[in-house]
Length: 370
Ligand code: T4K
Image (cartoon, rainbow, N blue to C red; front, side, top):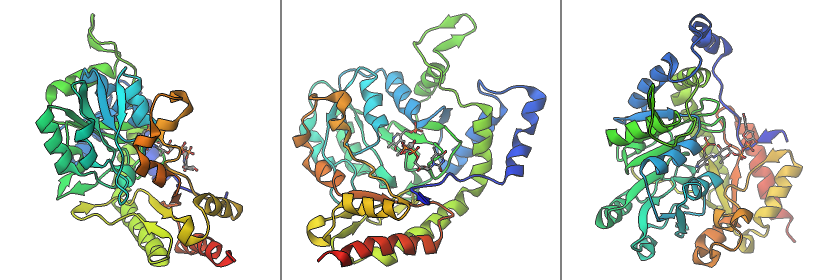
């Protein structure tokens, strides 16, 4: 493939070398060192949140959050997401209850949440999928009414704001991913943003084996500490992230100018009150109108060296590891969308010429249909 769905952003090499130089003096490589603390402070300010803790990845952020909240029973969530969201729930011994999604922005359909609540429901885990922000007000209303925790999977939503507030300030906890493929990366990494300082203490211990003090271990924790090299990468990448987002914005706008109004192609909405990070560029292809199916367009792009991706197909409630456990007919909109969605390449140094080429390949499909 010549053009992949994304390409990690990296700082200039000498910036990174400068940042890690002192690690050769201190020999302090992990376990909440100086870089970890520095990045934490910088991110707190950048994301506009009052509390943040760094972890090895976005998945452990989700998994340990659910553990730290000491949840039991059922969790209402979406199947239109990466494996991580559902796995974090199941690996905590919780039961995922899948809610359908909106056809317009692909986030959990908040109007369908209440009908899924039982006396076993303990939490809602919505996903700001592709950086599209969920119906925060309605989710908050429901959670308040029924006394449920809200844990946002904000893996795609780094740096976004809703009504001027950092996206990490909503719900009980928001979990971010800083994976190499994300708008902001620490190679591998993640973070939790939260309001309750007791929760903060619990997750801080759980990411370090549940160690409370030199001779006290009072939680069955894991090892999910961000190391100093990853934190240093984050410090460097953070200096460039605004630039990164601006470049992504201009690429996304170029895609829109090429694909807007094409019959049979639906673009992701520009959401009101949201400062977007342009994390992904998904398109929905309606075969009946466009003439070619999503899979045919995917194959055609691949033949031309373009690695688009079917994020998120298959739905997590159809995974083989859950065979027969969940009734997929209960999430018909998610089924419909997962069969039609295609995520096009998007990263800061993707050129306009590349975007033109990708769009040409897509539009040629339409022309070729007899
Ligand atoms: N929740 C949601 C909603 C998520 O989407 C994710 C992760 C998580 C939770 C969990 O967060 P983490 O634990 O990962 O921090 C990728 C990412 O690995 C994953 O982080 C991401 N979501 C998911 C949507 O995409 P793959 O299996 O598609 O990755 P891969 O290896 O095929 O890479 C995609 C493209 O990225 C490659 O074609 C080229 C480019 N790339 C990849 C790597 C690894 C780079 O340019 N540099 C790299 O180092 O999952």
